[in-house]
Structure formats: structure tokens, C-alpha cells
Image 1 (tube, rainbow, N blue to C red):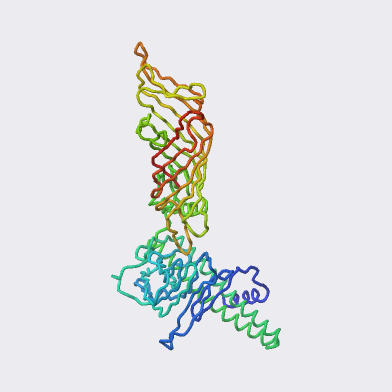
Image 2: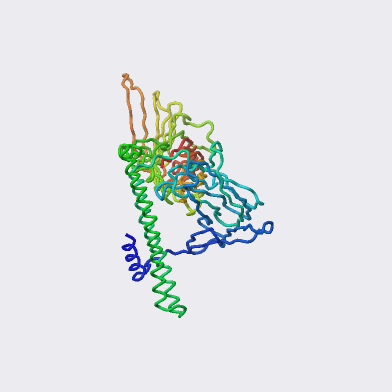
Length: 531
């Protein structure tokens, strides 16, 4: 097997070039490493600790005033040394003008298939300028762990120093600090484990080939500069190829043994196969779903009228820069006459408004969740119920509220509008970081919106219910313009939590075109924005 691998690697190394390069650079700072995409956003370095000759102080410093993304120095530890143990990472950190946040981080993985435990101190961030302070991260390392990585990160402008980074096993009674806890791992199905091992075997081969390619290119470069002869270079290439071939054989054999043991454990019933019934199926929800993490399960949200294919689809679509919501609002409605709504000619609780429509919600800043621009289209119903058996009557260019000669069981005046609402929304939902990915969801915390609306009237209708002279119940519907303004616009605001908010609207355009006294519609109620 080793000869076959050796020949294949020599062919690849000698005859091919790496065709695609990511735009970035791999940083090494002593035994710490960092991959940074270009353009460069952070500088990583180290300096000697004046208080300890054998101690290094590492630094991460921003080189841009505006930064999207974090910079991190990290290293790895052998997972087999800590399996089924509680691991604590400690370090001393000093900060200067950290605008966003900084923190220690540690991550426990099962290959690249599962994050078994993770904490980056985002729920207890280091901010501003601070002197040397000791911080810690504690995670439980499950027996399935295949890798442990840890380090220190800086998100946004500023500078941090850190030193004396240590890992130590502590008693299992010490609580974990991460939101993703190692003592609460989800079962990893057989199929996921098998694919992860197969991917690792492929990665081992590819990594060794790339490493050999770099060494071969280096030898070719020395030949071109006359530092070594071509014959000597060929000899060195062959020796290096033997080393990498041996590495592949050794490491692949380890993974193949794991795969064989995995199959045996599956046959013995020690590991469950992936349950298709748990992963698939349909879940119908109203509002937010707090228990939808069921793999490929179809999620039908009746309130937002959306269909999601699993929780990952929910996270992805609700974290887009532009999302959509179904909006429904209702409440009380009345007219402001002579700049006041007191002593109104209309019933306060029986006069209602309804509104429903669809809004777009665009996050204004790509990497900040506070400001959103909301826009859309709504259908608004404003209903007024007059007091004291009165109703509206058109009198030329005027529209008067007159008294009925008979008792009115109901007197309702309805105006229907198509409106375009526009709002600037302040959403205080914090971003989530999972597996190193930022999720900017909206409508998960307190919200405040201010803006307005404009549109046109669709129809006006008056409904009168009364009993005629012979005792028959009569329902009279009259359609017309009633001298109502065809164009309407106004101001609106709302404040609330998650999908529910208190909603206030005020028409700047008077209800009637040429009435001697301006009367403006005002509405107060509840608003629901369903993602």
C-alpha cells in the first residue's frame, strides 16, 4: 500500500499545481496560528513579558477603524487526553478601546460534523479598556471528541494583550460556562459518524499531498537558484514523498480502524442509526417555535404563512439581511376634532380599526442588528360608530353628522384604504454566534418603530340597522364617497417585544375634503409582526 501511495503522491506533486487560492494569508505567531482573509483587518504579534523572561505576551490589534468580523489566535490540544473530563482554560487579558467585545474561546468537535461544546464569552464579554484580569472558560469534553481548539479573540476595533494561557482538568462539579454544553450533547447517528470518518480519511490524504507539494516547490526553487543540484533535489523529493506516504498510511489506518469499530458497534446495537421518523414529518406552529430542532422536519408557520424545511432553513432565512413579515393589527379608532379626541361624537370602544398586510424588513448595516428599514403594503379598515342615533349625510360639499328620526341599533361608517407604511425600526435583538457564524435574527427582543404611511381610499360605506314602523329589522348599506379624501397619509409608531407591540396611528390628512372643521382619524391598538 505504501508503494502505491508513494507513486501517486510523486505524480501529483511533480505534475500539478494548486489551481485556486483563497484570498487570504495564514499567520503563525510562535505556536499560535490564525488564518486571516484579505484585506488584513488585524495584526497579531508577541512581545516578551518584562516580569517573566520565559513568558510571552501575545497581541491582537485592529488595523481598520471599521471592521466586520473577528480576529483570533488559537491552537489545538489532543482530545484523547481530556475525554470524559471537565477542562478549564484560563488566561490573563488586558484590553484597550475595545468597542465591540473580546473574550477567550474554546471548542470541542467531533471531526467537522458536530460541535460538542463551545464557549466564546459573548454572554460575558470583555469591553472597553481594562487592566490585566484573569478569565476562564470551562467545558466538558465528551468521549466522542476528536479535536479541541482554544484561543483568544477580538471583535471589532481595539487592541488586546493576553498571556499565561493554561488548560487544566478540574472536578466535574465545576459548572460549564458555555451555552453549548458538553454534558448535554445530542446523539450522533451512525450515518453522521461514518461520513465524518470518511471525510477525515480524504482530508488526511489531501493535506499530506499539499504539504508535499509545498516542499517540492521549495526544492525546485533552490535548484533554479543554484543552491542544490537537480539530482540532489530529486533524491530529497523522493525521501519527502516517502515520509508523507508513511504519514498517510499511518493516519488513514487509524481512521479505518475507527470505522471498523463503528460498524461493529452498530451491529452490536451500541449506536443508533439515524431515525427518519424523527428527522422528517411536518410540524404546524403558530408564532415562534421553541422546539423545532428536528433535522429535516417540515415546519409550517400559520401566522407568517411560511414553510421551512428544518430548523437550519429557519435560521438561514430569518437571518437574511432582508426578511418579510405578515402584519396584523387591531384596536380602537376615533376622530380628533378641534385638536382633541375628548367628548367625541363616536363611541370609544365600539369604533374599531383593522389592518393586515406584508412588510419587508431590511437590516441597514450588514454587521449590526439595531437599525432596520421596514416597508410594505397594508389594507386598513377604519370604522366609526356615532353616538345618540346619528349618522353621516352628504350635504353638497359638506358631510354632516345628523340625528336619525328612528332609533338606530347600529350606525357604522367604514373607510377602506390601501396604504404603503414606512418605518425606521430599532431592534434590540442581539446577534447570535454559532459555530463561528453570525446570525442576525429580528423580532426576538424589544423593538421600537417610527415612521408613517401614505395611500388611497378604496371605498366608503355606511351601515345603519333599525326597526321599521311595522317591526321589521332593517339593515341599510350605502356606498359612496361621502366627500372623504381619496388620498390619505399620516404618522405612526409602535413599541413592543418580539412579535407584539403597541401601535399608534394618526392621519395628517383630514377625513373629509371640505368640511368647515377638520377631523383627523386616530387609532390605538395592538400590532403583530409574524416572521
